[in-house]
Image (cartoon, rainbow, N blue to C red; front, side, top):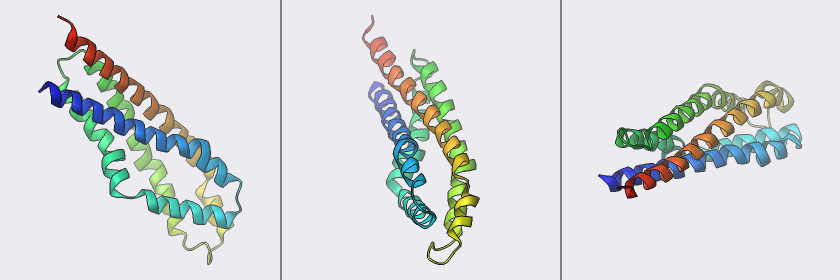
Length: 166
């Protein structure tokens, strides 16, 4: 059972860190870079990246996996010293998950539904997308998921420390 507890917490930490990294790279490189492009490039590139990120590895092992592994780690650590840290990390990542589904994904989908950048009014599509709003909610996702990652890292430490104490 101890091996499963450690493995679930390690998986939760890794997947949460990976997702925090994805959100962070969008905040620090992708969106600032796209902000400097013309409307057609912005719309086309964003649509392409959004289609590419919808894959089993990111969605299953990363985005959804972080939630599932953290929940599993919490259940397996219910009576352990690491549980409070895992529980708070789960709540923070759950908020991240909900913000993504409720705000960022619908915005992404609306931009994709606008159509081919070669045939639509790309300035109108970009304006309707509302980059500032998307970026603001993405910064929230960065903050929440990064703190969740840190808490899970701390939970690993606490879990390891408590397993070697008499």
